[in-house]
Image (cartoon, rainbow, N blue to C red; front, top):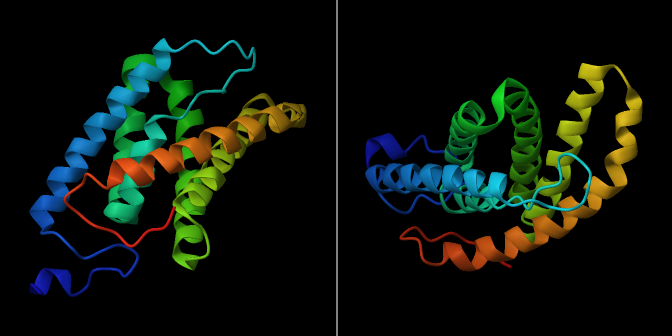
Length: 183
């Protein structure tokens, strides 16, 4: 163990060199940005703003489990800022950042308990992301009635979160870093 790894937090696996983790994180950030772009191309005929498949969150779940919280947070913030500047603008960044920060914190806390599978953690993250966006929307427009969208957004968060969690479990197996996870 190198001296730089001694202070490493216990929330992520210590396997793999720092250079290897950084290279994987850079690749995951790029992949998350590509997935964000693909989401802008997929029209969902739901009629409610904010309902997306969440495929970019696949990368964040993988980063949370295969790297650690710091890497997952960094990848998410980079993805949101760059994709916001390229595709959605300032308000898109604000909504996405609010949802992402609440989501990553919820997922990290649930993961640390060891009581939830990757799919369960991802599902909670999907719901938390939608709640974070609704909180910001209701603050920006000063109207609590924005939460009338909550039932539909919760269902979409649950469904997409489970799918993303299952995909992350299987996709993560191809990484050179190995975590301790259960489906």
